[in-house]
Amino acid sequence: MEFETSDHVVLDYTDEGQGQPIVILTGFGGAKVIWRSQVSVLIAAGYRVINVDSRNHGLSMHTDKGLRISRLAMDVYELMQALQLQQPIVMGNSMGAAIWFAYVSLFGDDGLKAVIDVDQSPKMLNTPDWSYGFKDVTWADFPEFFYQPLGSATYQHIDNLTYQAVKRIAKIEPFDNELTQPLLIDHAFQDWRDVVAQLTVPLLIIAGGQSPYFNPEFAAVTAKLAVRGQSVVVPEAGHIVMAEQADAFNQAMLRFLTTI
Image (cartoon, rainbow, N blue to C red; front, top):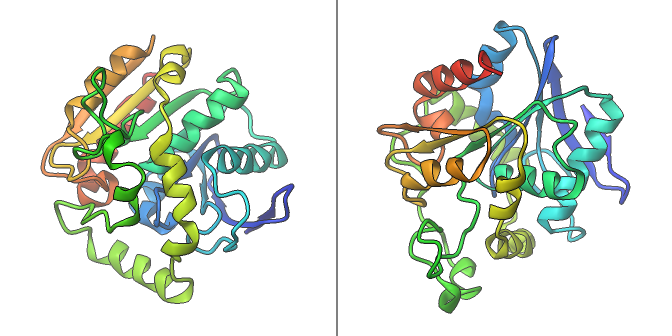
């Protein structure tokens, strides 16, 4: 399905199942098909799943407009308004989780039921008061570090069917890293800790125990910032937890969903 934003960028999304809506976002450079193992499980559990490719990602339009986390948050807000979603649960991996923090910063969490953050620290840069940023990157490395390859995001191989699906999309619409670089820089610049602290809805953080990007201890530390926060670390998983350890991830996700 396609949706045109207020600044005339066309987003590609899927809308499947019935029941409580869940809206899903993927990380920098990713495509929505990476969630295939979660979409099928959620539909079977009675959820309506809206899975979105952000601008410049997957099958959505490539553009040099609006390459900011705040604009991507506005994009998904506009889509959710158009779909007239009531109290959706929102879930994002990596930058996808940061987009949801931006959404809450802009619009509050009154219209949401819960937030799920998959392996994304609320602050990417390490500072004297925050040692859970991306690798060992500090202000001294910014922004130059993020113009270089970030290195592998995974610890385990993702399952073959998901891998093949991701490769098919990459062949149809290759990700343009150079075009999208301003978005990564903006992402790395942000600090969402104040947003997490102001959340009133349940928050679950699922971290990869072997994430190449983040110390998994960030999950428990961040969850403590939130009034209704909790965290899970999935062993033997890297940054793309849901595709590397789908069964363990799905168990943690569904367990959380039954409590809200």
